[in-house]
Length: 252
Image 1: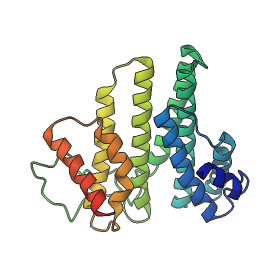
Image 2 (image 1 turned 135 degrees about the vertical axis):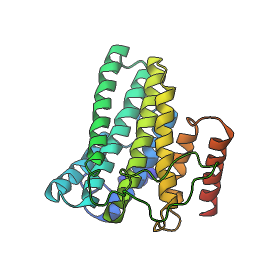
Image 3 (image 1 turned 30 degrees about the vertical axis):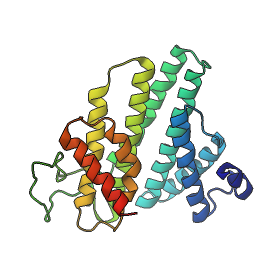
């Protein structure tokens, strides 16, 4: 039904012409990609829609190199296209449409794209808005499984949205490495666990930041679910996940 409405309301050419259209596309694309990954299928919306949105965001980012919002819009577009290409590649492998050798070549190409996405976010690391100290720091307790007060890769002020972009990237990397390890029959659990832990550290740091918006935790409901599969299976990590999921519920 959503796919039908997309074609009735929008085209690849009009999908980026205003904020409302871009928001509709971003909502639908997230649903389309997640459904495809879970079902082992390609996205239903064709590739030209994703490319058109990315080309628009790339042009805007190039024209406004100091505009954080436009740079992050480009990151989100490229992250969406990466996820779309990932869903497509694994669907082709599962259906026998490509050989394992072809899969390895294309999988390596995806890995390089993922590194470029990481590099885009790392470009913010030396900003004056990177948090180096936490004046509202609370003492860590035995139940705390992360140190959310690490200096450096956490951002405030105009770079606050970069924290959410890192969580999205870590979730994407986690899904990619998991799918790769399954397809290539590799042992990757230590790396998957580290990606999950880093994701959760960001979530905890955002939750403890005194100037966060109300209901911020709702943005993490997908990420918490994905990360929970790869966290250590001890009571402290399980209870952390339960508390965060309960907090999502309480926030609506």
